[in-house]
Length: 154
Image 1 (cartoon, rainbow, N blue to C red):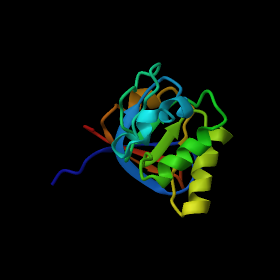
Image 2: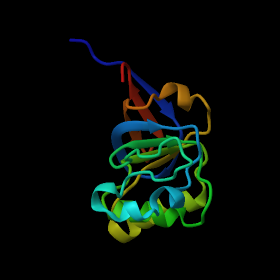
Image 3: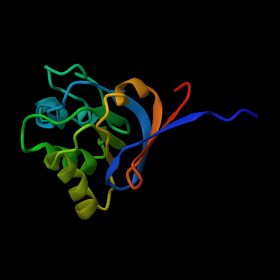
């Protein structure tokens, strides 16, 4: 029986927990307010859909995914948008980000404190993250250790 080869990258653990899902990878920073504050996001079936017309992920659903991106841009409301996505069951399963700023992280921290729901965030500053993880690959993120596991052939 063959076992899958797994590539493991180690980033900096920011918020704990474990998340697994289909990777959504972008080299474009995300403005969470612009992405998730559109009237369409009020509809239950569209809550997790990126609606920022200036982003390459326009129309992409993030719920249950592992979102891989460089950083947040824009509004101080980023953390509140993350919190709202968690509350609505529309959040990513995990986040891998090159620069985990306090506004982004605040949403994951508040989700755990207020709702008892963990959203693992791992900071991985290297550009090789974009070569190692392909969109639609299944990956696992451990927010306690900072490990990002990528099975071969994903």
